[in-house]
Amino acid sequence: AALMIEGNIDIPKLQRAFEELIRRHDTLRTSFEIVDSEPVQKIHKNVEFSVKVVEGIGAGLDNDSEDIKDQIDRLADNFIKPFDLAKAPLIRVQIVRLSEQRHILLLDMHHIISDGTSMGILVKEFVSLYKGEKLKDLSVQYKDYAGWKKSMEEGDALLKQEGYWLSRFHGEIPVLTLPLDFPRPAVRSFEGDRIWFEIDSSLKQRLKELGTKKGASLYMVLLAAYNILLSKYSGQEDIVVGSPIAGRNHPDTENIVGMFVNTLPLRNFPEGNKTFSNFLDEVRRDTLRAYQNQDYQFEQLVEKLGVKRDMSRNPIFDTMFVLQNMEIPEIEIEEARFVRHNLRNKAAKFDITLEAEENRNGISFSLEYNTGIFKRGTIERLARHFNKILEEIAKN
Image (cartoon, rainbow, N blue to C red; front, side, top):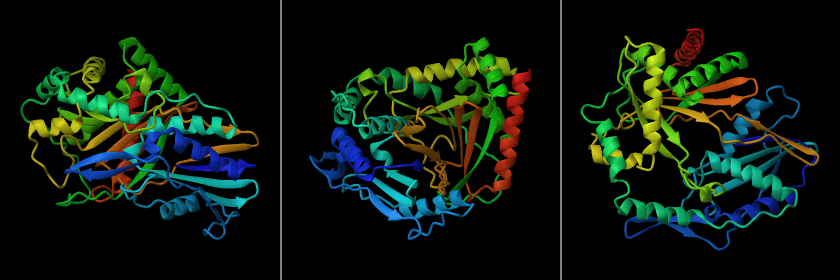
């Protein structure tokens, strides 16, 4: 994450706030080791942590330049480095001073200790701690959740869920065949880029009203539309799209920093003889069933199905859809305002990931894509076609 800070910032106070967050959450004091061929979580009582402060000019930043966003991206590229999982904490923070009234805060955290919801928790708690407020102690830590999860997997609780997923993927699993710009390499690369686009509040409202009529959420409407886009491009009527789910099913997990997310492979059938209305009914029904069986881990399903591993692509699905609702607020503390900057991400986890985020002005989307198989122009055209589908289903 990258945040532009406008106004006065007290760096020692900011340092203390991060130190308290690390003291408060076990995961921020966690490293990982291999014991008897198994990875285990090691929680340290104390870890060394400091917010690094660098001067903007020394970091190669020109405060007067109009392309400050590009410079922040370059700065972040130098800041983000691989973590050694055996060394805690798996979090880094850096402040770049542009002037007395302008700073950039860079934060890098390994996904093994956090997820999107965790980011929202950290922001809210950081604001409270910076203001000098005392937070209520946590009754549960991530290690408790990990223990509960392990006991659940060792018991019979997941057998019914396993049955659902095995039946959902009975028979031949479809492989998405989108038209590519370059031959797919024998070994998947993760080089990527992304584009941003948006729809206005009027179209968002009409899509929500459509969903309300059908008892479907905005997520389901967008997922159905994305399936149609993929079907039009591939000519296929049996499509699997991966989608993350928060995995925080118990109230005790609401304020814990950690990696709870599971991936649901959602299989749908956008057949040409269906109306959108009928297809949305199917998507709604099958998405709800997937939610009811969300505790069964994606990795276990891959193993159980005996999917033949292909080094050139992800197992079961090649594309992902995400509706972000991480509730990361705009931060205003005393005389400082923190504004989030969308970092340019030069990696792609899948062939294509469509990410949507609601805001006051409508819905902003990003399309992350693998630059080894797609040109930017192709993805820009894909975005225009997705927009067109949304407009058409809102009309009819």
